Image 1 (cartoon, rainbow, N blue to C red):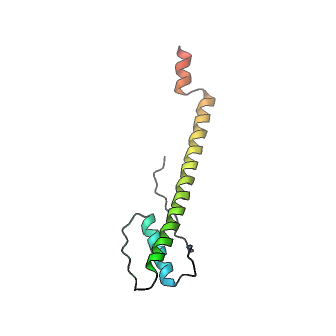
Image 2 (cartoon, rainbow, N blue to C red):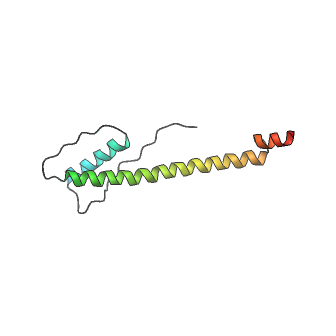
Image 3 (cartoon, rainbow, N blue to C red):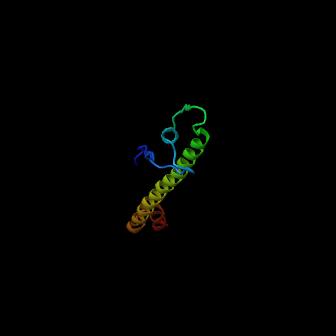
Length: 103
C-alpha cells in the first residue's frame, strides 16, 4: 500500500460575510496551507484588518474540507478492501475456508 502523503489544494474562495480584502484572502490561504501541511504559522497583520474573522473563516473552511477529504480517503480504502475480500472469498483461498475444509 502507498503511504504517500496527499494534500488538499488551497482554495481560492473562503466563506466570508462580505467580499474579503486581499490581505484577508492571503491570510486565510496561508492559514489553510499551514494547517494542511501541519506547519507552524506565525501571522501578523495591522490593526483592523480582520484577523479574527480571517482566522475563523480560514480554519472552518480547512476543517470542513479536511473532514470531507478524510471521509473520501476512508471510503476509497474500504472499497478496495471489500473488493480484495470478495476476490479472496470467490477463490476459496481465505484462511477460514482452508481451516474448515481440514476438519
